[in-house]
Image (cartoon, rainbow, N blue to C red; front, side):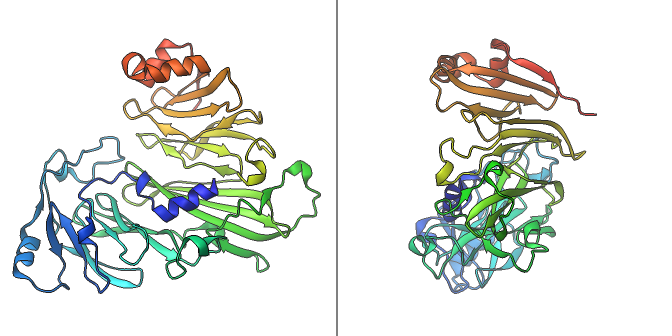
Length: 414
């Protein structure tokens, strides 16, 4: 799992961000000496530090993004930019933002979908990205303790990690900021005899030591920390992970802290779990969160060896109250990661049966409006039919619930 997360950082977080807009083309890569060059609708735009070319300056003063449709999302906690709701064009902002990124002072425009690639990094990584209008995500490079980084990453570049998130109002005045490292709870009050290794997880040379195999004499010598980010609609989600490792390289415990920020940068959920978790998925009304409890993955337990309890939890994040929790220690079942359905807004999570030919999955669907938790076990043949005929016969998860005999449980949320 950590190898996948490592690759995720190297490739950037672009694949999980909902950020549309005009892309920087190959010919319009930014230069190194404080000159930002980008392409908007096949027209070149440069900042004030570039060579003063009258034609380019004229474009810089007048250009507008044409035919860029920004879909308003009525499911966000609030509508922040009513003036761009259901419109076809967005004027390029005249107000410049100045920031220091990768040791360079830069001036750039925020226009609702701005991004900037580092010209020095060996892969295309968005070091600045306006993931939603007024929400700007920054990355940075660090020297990583990750084994093998010397083989995969040039030493001068290091590993790309989350840096901070800034939140602007409709006039692009900064109203909030969230520093990733400063808010990491696992970097505070670290015992002096504990070594902290940042962005580090060695899946090959470490193994999880189950409680049943421990002697009670194991001593924690290192904290292996990993931080990742994800964006869901207008929500910014940070997942801090800590692994306590013995002097023999055995993982004794995992602790995760998840933080969710709304569109204004306010923390609406901050929860620490003494297990490995997925990202939380937030309901569209901003009231509920669902997340998986996962098995710590190392090469020694890639199958069912050292299998730990898995499950999921549902929380009312407005009241900071857990309303459902489930654990399963069946080594033949593996929990998936939750997701939200695009139209109905159901929160879905599944158990899978990778070693079974008869059973495909056990599905849970939580309806935030009715507070009903639906569940059903699907056979391999049933799910094959559903997959093959989804568009023509089943079409949606609410229809699936109507067609099949799901179990119903009304969750108490008082």
